Length: 415
Image 1 (cartoon, rainbow, N blue to C red):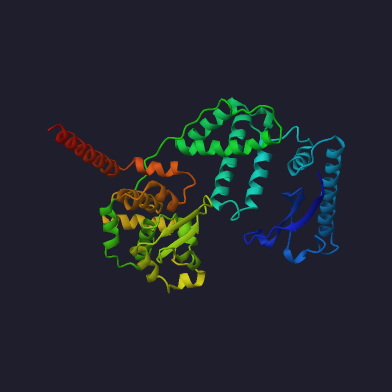
Image 2: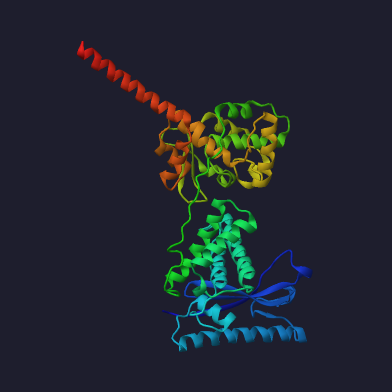
């Protein structure tokens, strides 16, 4: 493998930096992988020479920082040569481990592996991963680090020490320390497992400690609005302009099934004329990257028309003036109170409402609903069908009618 190593020294600019001082980082690029390491040094942007990657000037402080930079660069090249000399695979991870621990990849720490994983995810945010996904993995890393410090009084632990007992104790720690629900806890462990698979994929360990680990996600009944409740919200006279705006966008999602982030990202190019000559939404779900093509009903069309000239839409090239998710959900609580709806109204309920009350309850085929929702598997959509007594009643009603008709025909043939 071609082990061309590139080193870039740069300032990581942050508006919240104390006194304008910015941290100096080293970025390593090797065989298509990248990692960034803080040098623990800072300087003012006005004192930094981007071309030479050094601090400008001959004062003692400037010389000291520049000498440290050269020292770290030489240390990196030296570590690479040592790894090659002892026959180790030279990778970003093994190089970072050698620099930080003085050991080769045969002695890797799980926290280092996890951090490297998250840094690579961060570099692909809004390309392959949603910001929310990065946040979940960072939270998992935070919980893991706190567990290791609590259990072993250290900040790192060798990947070879991760066993079945470690995993089950980590799970218990999450449940008890953060009071997480079963499904949330299992999600953190799943994230941990995905990162740990890196160790298996690279043959850093011989045995998978998750082999005998059992976990089960509990099915959660998803809240949705009934037709009566939709009507209450839709027809309620709301004088507050901001609440009226939130109400419209929520109703829009009830009739399109789009998640919050997908409504937020919706722009005029996503509104097209479909094969039937009517208006459709053509988009891709940010969460799964699957296509979602939705014919627009009359109510969402009216809502789009209402906000076509809204300043926020024109400035951001969006079709709806969507506020932050936090503010939207806060206003939805007010709307629920105003309308007398005794449910914890959140924006995601709109998506569940589309799947249940708007489509499946009105006999739209499961496959069609799955396609519009942008589900990657129809199993996800089937869960909505399970919770609809009305749908069960309708389907059994058809069966009863067929059986009654069959019985009548048999009776007539016997007479």
